[in-house]
Length: 338
Image 1 (tube, rainbow, N blue to C red):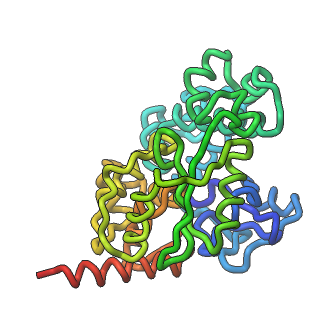
Image 2: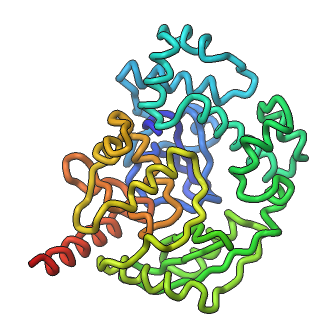
């Protein structure tokens, strides 16, 4: 999503940042999100000296208007329809729908559904009963939640509330040229590929996401995928199109992730070029956000997306790793060129 829509803070450091900050990504369990810098400061966090979130200013009036609409949509008690939202920013309904999708990468309706689902997810994690969480999140009925919100949880609401105890996730950690890589899979496919410094760090992160799921070391089921990941981490080509994935995200995020799988190694694309490929030429910031949220590193090669000026840009797993991957892929591509 466009920079300025939210800010994130890290409990272990006491610092809050802009989403485009180049600092190393923290563990999700240590992260808290805020709509404004003032809210982060009020919660006791101090501004990052690298990205200066306290100085962040949105100068584009169009972006500012979309951010304002996002803020209104994030409040369950604000039941304004599109006509009312358009009136607030001085646009026609048609113009609002088009610009909102261009900036955020999703429709207004999809954004509302995602916000409601996120509120339910937070409430369930806090132990709130399912029915209470559903209505507090803004759903008009339990049926509406089960049709639109429940599929985003990846398991039944009661199961998710308990940390997905009925879900079994197999995993393996492999050594690669860029560090330890954890590969995790449900019975539907690979749900996470994470890069880190140690086995324990990666397992803690996986356990935080699926706190009550059964995490089982894989015997040989992930052996072929592990071998492919080792090759990818070294910059060499490996067949990944047949690897089944269990991706959980918004419709736009999944669309971006699928597009990334078509980028050939050694031929990086810019965020704008990916947006163009998707038929949304003004959604480059939304593409960048989807890249940052990519749960399956290497197999979904978000590292192959760079800035329009050719610089590598940020990377969830560290800018140094991204640079190493791009360099290795460039060398491998050059060595195979006739």
